[in-house]
Structure formats: structure tokens, C-alpha cells
Length: 107
Ligand SMILES: [Zn+2]
Ligand SMILES: [Zn+2]
Image (tube, rainbow, N blue to C red; front, side, top):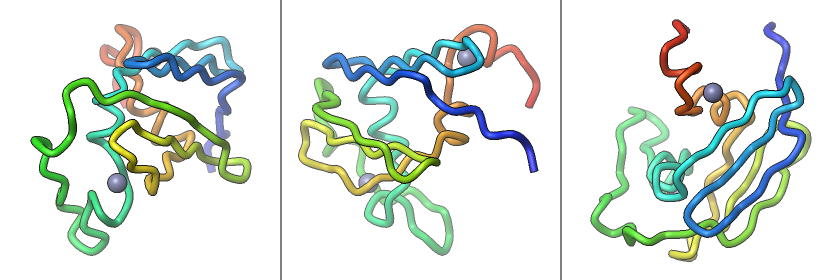
């Protein structure tokens, strides 16, 4: 099992979500990008993994209103379109990092 890197600090700042990781890495996500990646059963078909979410139903200006830690492994966000059922594991969040370093690194 690979070591789990945890966020040291999470800031939800309107249209961006900033995560400072304990290994010193910093991830900046667009709120809408994360919202569209919502892993909950309403947005992703649990069996097929197919997206159920109609992206047109998500406002372009969607914001992260609130976040809370789930246990010791994930974060739950409250989005301004009043959706909050998605639980984003640290692993998923880290994998979604869009910084130059991560997008150029091979998985
Ligand atoms: Zn969802
Ligand atoms: Zn990164």
C-alpha cells in the first residue's frame, strides 16, 4: 500500500479550492472542476462508473461554500449548488492536481 499523503491545510475560496499537502505540495483546483468530478452515486453510476451528472445543470459560477474532513481519509465539500454528497478521498484529490508538475509526471 502506498503511503497516504494528507492535506495540511484546505482553503475554500469562492471559485478555487487550495490544498497544501503535508509533503509541501500545493494544489489549486477550480471549484467547478472539482464539482464536476463529484464521486457520489448521484453523479457517477456506482456500477458502471459512468457519469450521470449533466454538466449543464452545474452553474458556471459554482463555488465551494464549506468543507469538512471525513474520517482521516477524505474531504466533503458543500457546493453552492447545494450538492454535498460527494466524498473526495485524499488520493483522488491528489490525483486530480492540475499543477504543471503533476500533469507532466507519469502516474
Ligand atoms: Zn455528486
Ligand atoms: Zn500537483
